[in-house]
Length: 228
Image 1 (spheres, helix red, strand yellow):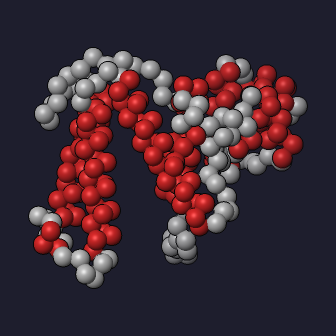
Image 2 (cartoon, rainbow, N blue to C red; image 1 turned 60 degrees about the horizontal axis):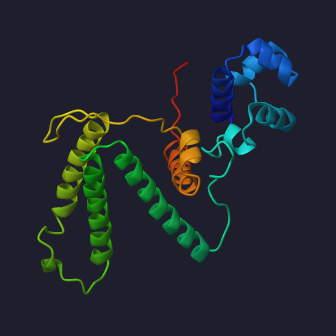
């Protein structure tokens, strides 16, 4: 919790444009203790977390790093049966893709939505090939790219589209893309929640899940031993 909480706590204070001394006084703690909280040197108790959430107008889940939505609406689902979980994940993916494509279109780019669709098409192709390969009765001859080659070919194309998506999103030219003057607007989690109240929860939940997964500490990490 420490890293997410301390980072968010400090960010909220800076956004409110108040000093650490002022925030500490309003929250009923010493400036030294608040500094320790903001720098991850100490972990707060639940009463302070609740006070800080109320003070900054956010949910405890957001403050603790469990949700990327300030109202806590995008907390990854807890325990549910397999069918409910699968249905929810499918719905989230569909809504998240719809939101991303809409964001791309709102920039005014004629190239960015196409590049995103091409990238996602390759992802779908790879997944389908994996499912097809698991079927002993599947005939590989129906595909042009062989079993041994398709992963490398897909990965190469995906990397190319990743580069083109970054270029198109910046409105820059190169690699077959034309320079474009794009419409810029905030895309922070808070802004997404405001602009897309019905779709943002799905995207923010996925972002939180992936963030948790890629930042999860490795199990049984190797320790560095120093010689005495």
